[in-house]
Image 1 (cartoon, rainbow, N blue to C red):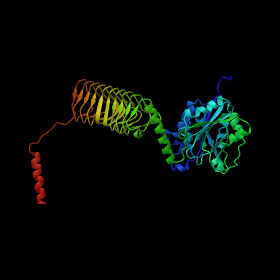
Image 2: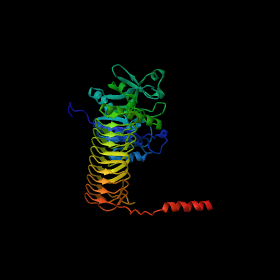
Image 3: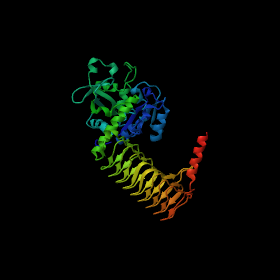
Image 4: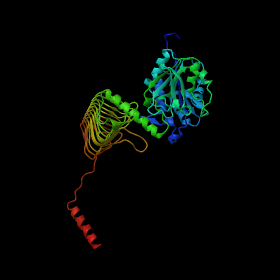
Length: 454
């Protein structure tokens, strides 16, 4: 490695906490923020920062967390902390997996889902400027139980004092530790080997490495993030607060990029929602994961989108549901109480009300009448329905898959279509109408006489 090359980067993500305050059978770090497991958001940030390897320290009590991490990063990424002896002990558990690694180690947390790559980058900047240990702090509105940063001048960090072990002077400090830190692997593990559980919890605190580094005359510096960026989750209430913080930031970012939201506080976004400049989102819209919306599209109130693409100028809703695989073309209309699942809808096509379109395609310019159903499931298997360009599907049609409607074809209202329909044809699939003259009057008279007799 030359002087101009930055050191390699590894990440150790701590995720071994039991999360008992969550009150849930789901392991804490598998709870979701913006539709993504918290541990995955932590891994995302480490990957953006170029960390490799990424190790996740999990507890033996939560095999589901280990399985989740292994499915994404491989078995080698999972480190088991057998005994919960503190954050310092948890990082030490990762030492064997980093044998021979000579770069920097970033320590983050699986229950701090909003710690983004952008928030952490200043630590790497401090390392590049000569800091041997860099710590991410924040100014707390209510320092409470947070560890306090005891600072010298110009960002120099002298030590971290945990709230349980702090005196009155320390507790008055508003600069707090997020727990996120960066150090060369050799230095980090040498310091951790000297940490002792001489504290109120009888645990090995990761934060004690700061004081030890200061004693060794190492350069220790602090960078600061916004408080809600480093918020941890230990309860359902805190999970909701972190979700709210994500939503505020995501809405503001989309608006700054040119997305119109008439009531942004009612719009909910996923971690990967992509809205192009010029999109309009009306009130009470939910974007689950996997949605992209192109310029000029309008998403009207009370619509729910997941795993879907919406083309330029399309109109969705109100009260529409786009499920995974929905691909809505330019200027297409998906109206109120229309559900689309795994269907490609062509440019300018319309399904304006009360329809289910599942598995298949709708050609450009086609019109889907109210009450139309793609009958795609026979109780065992799914089949496809294909409606050609410019076709007109009459109201209350049931298209029994597999079936194709040719370009320009019509189906009569109320039809049950079970066979393919040719181009420009009219298909009728309903029983013949029979009229019995005077039947209704005779029926009423008969019923009234029976009632009077009774």
